[in-house]
Length: 213
Image (tube, rainbow, N blue to C red; front, top):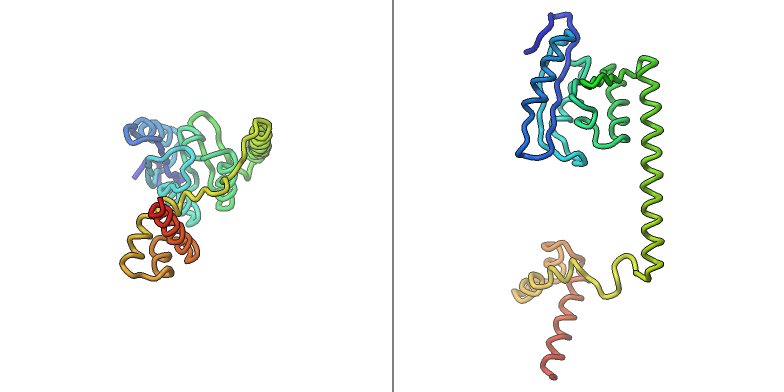
């Protein structure tokens, strides 16, 4: 499928764009040209549209499966951000690739082969950055909670708030009107039997008050 002879190292090309109106064409072209210059034999090009934080990446899973089967020697990407969702995710997948002796190579010159001193040094730096990012996130959350408390804002769901059950109340009442049991209605709409009973009880109480007025 690609350049290089039978003894050349095998590589998978991975391309990703964030939105449907973008194209992987430039990434694919640049990666193919790089593979030819570097002497890689391309075994496949894997393209997908997914945001940087999206967890489910079917095409990336296919590339990792190639690594698990030891069918590739490297994964080529235009930028590390195309591959990793975060620093922590990048580190986790690097370790998975390293276990199969597969390198991750970006066109900007970043190459991760954890079997080499340089690759291990880069991974150590990334681990430090990932820890720093986690600490910053925790600090922001704590600061936000403290600031909200100072303003007198109550956090979490407030007493009397039932967003899910209130949203499903019309459907629950309609099913109950058809003669279904609380348990069957709860199973259908994804609520507990007690929650269904509470919806019915509140509806009856409201109807009773309306009749009195």
